Length: 411
Image 1 (cartoon, rainbow, N blue to C red):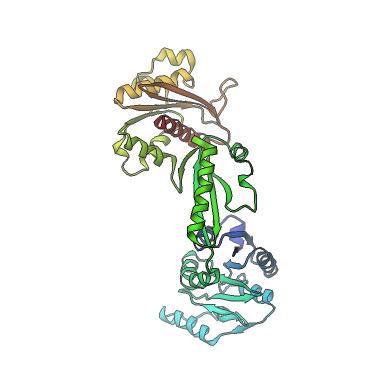
Image 2 (cartoon, one colour):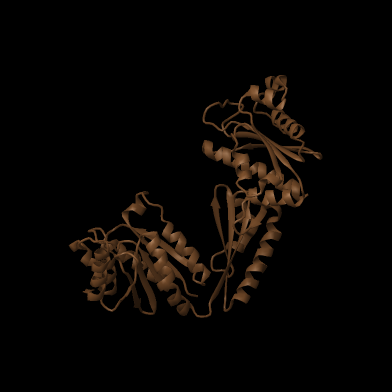
């Protein structure tokens, strides 16, 4: 199987000034043509560091793509590093120099002398055209393809699409890779791994990878075969097996979000929803209304942050709050019941909790949240204790509420 390795070059990637969006783009695009990424390296603007990374990348993969370090400044050293790695000298290409000079001429500017360095290419390599002044580089070494692309995302993407894609498709031949994604919520990564047993072992085909983003667990099924039909069949069989094992922990596929899946279910069943939020401060309503067409099912939302608002806006009895406290199972239930009655909806969600870091007690710590979902089948209440920071508590509370509603809609 053909595999790729990405080498991202630049101090700004290491110190956090710049997010490495180029590597994410390349990983996704390479997989669509049947070349999964085996490794990714981020290195400083130093010749020896780049050479070491290229050496590791060649050990990992057949296709090596480096980005960044092709500019005219003293810290742009990718062309020098590639020449050193290939064991050749840099050669001045007069045609490239003319193009760079023409670029500045069109802008009615004199070309700085330092831009001449961009016209140097490792001996035996090929220059790749660019809309900017930095040409890319293509080289071959022991049956492997090496590319150097600009770090500017717009230039990198255009060069990849126009110069690399045709080349890489020929290089791959008949190999086909199909990727399926299953989205999960309601259990931790380690729990899901235990449930799946050896399904996530390395070296399998299809390969199953697991990623976690903002509480959502995504299982990536990567199937490789001689042709796309076979790869699709393999991925589908693996996906069916994972669904059978995980059951209702799987809420969707592809890039579906919880709010999207819940919204589609509400619309399909012609059901309506209202929400009453305290500690989430409208986060749940925001997620719901992020989905186009939410007005079909979402009718009302209250942010009752204070005890007085819970009583005045929703009708939660003041003595109930006095007896049990605003953060309690009883108040969460009352919030949902009162919201459904006022809105006249099929479902209502009530959320009350302590997002932290302040407001906590020994009995009611930061991260304690009560979530209730009310319907004509009764009121379901869930107690959760979320860790991490305030933002995470609010997000997980909203997600958990959506998931509780999803499970109700499935039954």
